[in-house]
Image (tube, rainbow, N blue to C red; front, side):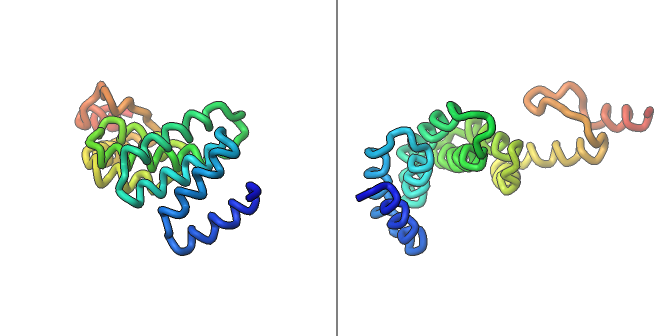
Length: 160
């Protein structure tokens, strides 16, 4: 079976959500092209949907590592989606710090629904960032180690 035929077959499985069969098809596609990050991402998604989070995370790790070797002009969509989905795996596996990093990365590169995940799993992240945005628009703060309290930001904003 050619690579193009595999692509067509996989599209069929997308519509019927036969994740086990899609995994088999992705396995075959990866055998044909072991550097195809799209197939690792797709297979990871299937494992994610089957609640096999560690296997899914491993596939997203592979997709991300393969994608990071591509030129800067490469479409970043797959990288940010892999980071977002890996964040979901990390939540399920209890790796909250890694999950937050992945969600923030995905959001930074335009995957805006990653903010929903941040709001759901890390409510302090969102409430703090929203308050800072209202008080001092355009101000960038390192959220891992903020140097000002919200009251200090309010006072600084009032002084200006």
